[in-house]
Amino acid sequence: MDRKRIIAQVIAAILLYTVISLILEKEYTQSIILRELGEGLVFGVIYGLFIWIREKWRKKEGS
Picture 1 (cartoon, rainbow, N blue to C red):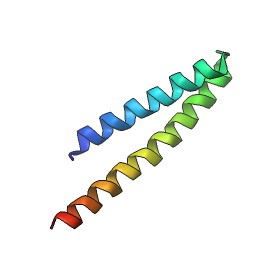
Picture 2: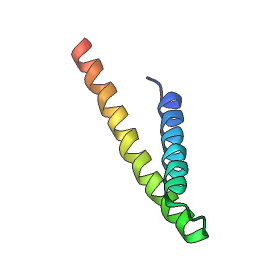
Picture 3: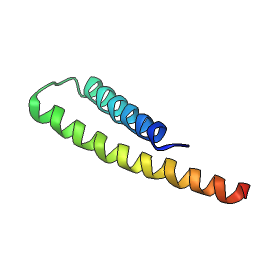
Picture 4: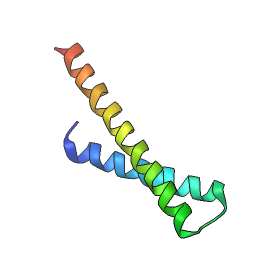
């Protein structure tokens, strides 16, 4: 999987996490939006690492 595809998936995950969290929170103040965006970034980084490790593992098994 190339780098652009992983980045696109991570950005989509960050946006989905943030939007769903804001919908569930039902408050839209600036501090809550920034908090949820920060949590979304952390989630995105962890998800990106998971995708990257999974792809490395698949390549290693396929060889």
